[in-house]
Image (cartoon, rainbow over all chains, first blue to last red; front, side):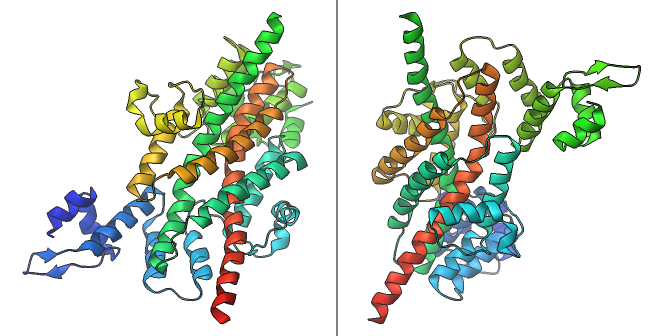
Length: 210
Length: 210
């Protein structure tokens, strides 16, 4: 297909397609003349991935890193997935010493989870737990038990639904599934609060009235 | 206490305390001279709340709105809570017509949840579901079932742990609990993925080796 069809097919504006080509995020098409090139299915797929990664808030260098991991996976798929997900926001310093992350470590030990102490999500958890303490609503044992159980349930579904085909499919699904499902979960939680609170307040009102 | 003690006690810098006083986010202290004032427990509490709301990403006008809702609640506690949580990011247009949000509506109907169609979380869910489709990993029935169940479990714990005392406590807990626990959930999910994936890849490696 021509570049105009690539634009129509992906919804990515022409200027952006050209920018991605210049930045090397999109591989060049097959030249058909000095000014024209032909593009194929792999360009559509790549452009969709770049668009989704940009939409998930990744800056260009981090999108490039994810694409490199897909094109030249170095190490086991497990390691590649970890590195790819490490490109997602929020961007925090990776723990130098796991001892620096006492709150996260205590939570992970309580949950009995295996974790890589250099994984950025450990720092993310530490910061989040610190903010809870600052706000005066620290994580209690009761809440951690329930959160741990339910979040594990969600994560099991996520891993179970991962494609087991190519490394590209796995990386795409892991990175996008991690990033793009987070706002879904946040919105669903807020809406579940509303539903539960509505029932709760109705009951309270009825009790008050009786 | 003097303003220097207020600073020491809350960890909010003096310049920021003065700024909050000017902006009316912090009520003035009791004047003890032309240049000095005395502050009390309510100033510590208010400053802690403003700090936490700012940390959760709320701009000043939205912090002011939350404080107004606490100081002058207008309507039922349920309505006040809804308005207070509506001040949290992400900032999206509130649905004019629920028909504009077909994906969110379908999910909420499937879950059998009561919802206020003008609640901003509906727009948030719609955007998030749209991004999933764009990325080629749409919400499936299987995933929605599991997500719905587990997120409801989390939300029930949240509501169950809400203080039932003053309206201030309820609003504080609802707003901060919604905002500050979202990064905790996101980090815990990423770490649960790592734990489950590690087990999963170990099993696959063992099968390959045998």
